[in-house]
Image 1: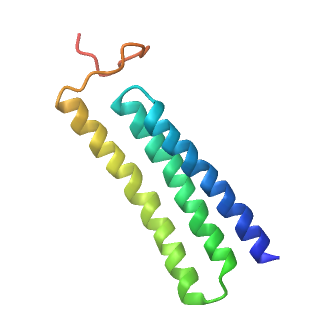
Image 2 (image 1 turned 180 degrees about the horizontal axis):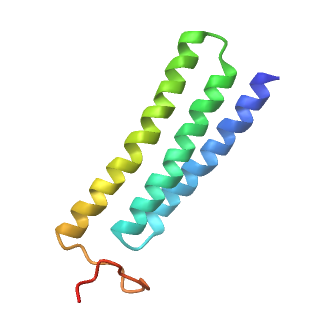
Length: 106
């Protein structure tokens, strides 16, 4: 039963990974691509690791998967924020179709 649950969770994770990869290719600017990479890929990796946690019976492997999930949930948004800030500071413009620029200088 745990193997089936784990496979379903891993399949959901693969779906989010695929959606993130498509978003990285299709989105028009750096900021939108960062959003796709951060949200979809973080959720996809965490779901894959969670599915691995369900499928394994060994405690050390389950603890490693859990620690990796926590590490990814902390570092991925932090890295995306740092990359977006660096892009903003270096002058990378938003896509022309963007509706609002909240950091626009008056």
